[in-house]
Length: 458
Image 1 (cartoon, rainbow, N blue to C red):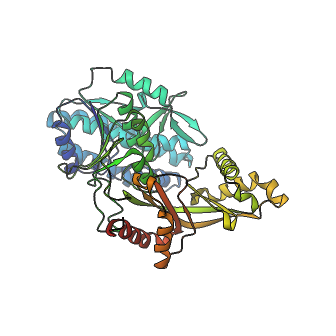
Image 2 (tube, rainbow, N blue to C red):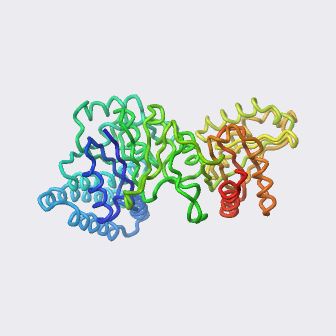
Image 3 (cartoon, rainbow, N blue to C red):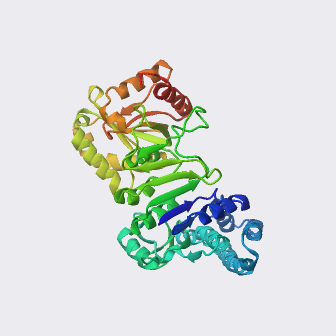
């Protein structure tokens, strides 16, 4: 049994949807198909809700949603299924309109209402895909994807979700099943929630892991993972195979192919992931597995994470790496702020950690509170934040046995006029990262890609 996930670009137009139909119907084994909302619709749902809240005109956007869904149904759903599909989707669209009217009347858009609004995307796309695919059955993901609150977010209750998935898809019952991704329900109240960014990928991974699928296929609009962003480096090449760890590192540092939490459920079950192109289904794609073929060089790929901030702590105490790491990590974790990179330089008595720019001020306050006694006693001199930065990561399992990669990267960049603010090769055995100014990302990727993929040394 296979699980297939199709993203927004794959279900965005009648032409791409017909590609989905052909892909699924040509698979001669049981499949569960997880679909996103029509391409761009989630953003439109949110923008229209904001307009309604602000008292602006929203009806024309809703009319455009109606016409788009009707047009797609006319072109991809068999004639004998069209009336029923239109009725299902129209009921949802009318419900959506009533919600917009309520938002405008109250002039408010609370988070719970926004979760409900964005759920309409997958709730409308899934019935269309199920009607389009021959002999497919429709499922409603909030029935079996359950969440709990963690700080200000909804996260999957994995044990309960696995139990519900096994009930929804009993052993031996799977044929061609279709469900929306992303949307879920609170385990206590039953209200509609969602899994956030990358939620459709995560939904598919949770299903694949719970049912011990043979493979998780992520269908998107690229031929697979590339060595870096081809829009920046035209010579970037497809990566045929890579490890789970390599893919997680690349995604964590900005690769947009899949969302990192997607990988965790299937990683623990050692279920391979394949990245495939809906618009070029003959392409072999990228296979992610626990035992990939060895890379030809040291580096498997590069990625960049923008909109970052670097928090720097100076003073004698910063030389105590275990204490600094433990206290910094815990102080940020208490505020729900992830630490994405850390560095320590003994010669300058400087300890730094990177967080998203949106979290920088809250992170700065958390660290000032944690280290207030040390600042008062003189063990630390200052804590400050630098914004408008980016992290460029170089990833490869073969770097476990390599030496001097960070120094070579820093030397090469400086020779080309780029001076990294920090570098790290201690937090991961497979990744070396540098912190640079955000406007230097493109040049940095070009320089480092050329170093690792064109130089005979690597």
